[in-house]
Image (cartoon, rainbow, N blue to C red; front, side):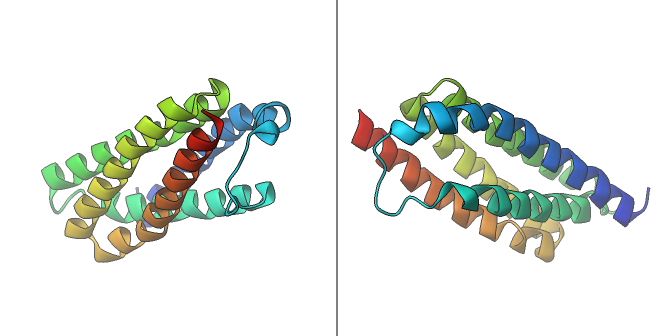
Length: 158
């Protein structure tokens, strides 16, 4: 498989994760989330879809660049891709916990673990391909903001 095919497979995978996370989120936005007390810095709802779509594409390109190095350092690349898969699963889990279960506290605990896994993915990817690591920095920044937002929503609604 060539590099472009690997990246395409991962873009499709990440966007599917985002799509299914969106399904869990969509109903709760109109029925539950709208009634929560939110901090002054809460962004408008319309911003989340384009931001997440961009982030999923960047993380997929990063993972594709790493996957493309599988022949040069098999064990290191495999480890990095496993960490990537774990953080992607945790990403999807957060939407289920926050919007599906309507549990901001549990989601807050989980997003801390997610942040740590994103940071570890960044570290692993940077060792293999610097550009792949750099592509994770906007994701790390957004999840840092999301963690603060999650904590604020929990605090305001406890």
